[in-house]
Image (tube, rainbow, N blue to C red):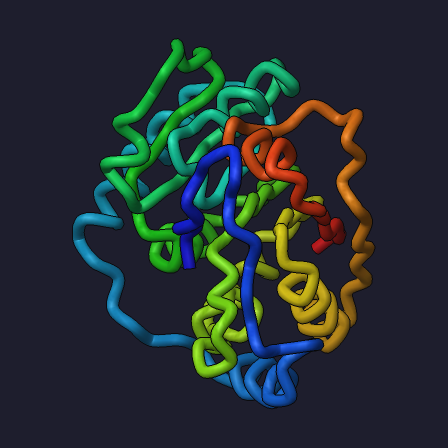
Length: 223
């Protein structure tokens, strides 16, 4: 569910046979709202979370999560945008995180961990991020892969439990329309807007989408 888009000046657009939200979406959302997901948390992710918790407790400043941060460029941009906050960027790919092109500010920590475990540990530890960014998650556009999308996965109630001002960006509008419906099921209101070309891109990734002419959208909600 992390992003696996190829990045180039001619970035591929998302191709799917879906022409609107998946017909099974709300059945999945309802099913997951009634049950706790019991997959065991790995020791590796527990250790990664413990390290992040130790870093955060040594800081003063409210928390912002950048989930699926890739190379961490978006996390560094957020750290500069919110200098009095603590930014934690999480990605499961050691390869992406190793491609750091610049200095990471003192108020930013990049963590290699799986979001599904990290989010559960964060809720258990009582984390309440002020803001939570999910920028360009892998849309999993094949209809048969619906349950790989965050909003149709058992993890979705955990994402909601983290709370905060939530923003998800995508180059596939249907993904965000589905997420808005899943949020609506949980009595949360979401707004979807096109991303204004005058707003500075949050990462080189977003910049590549723009220069290849793709329309981009963002969903915003208060969880």
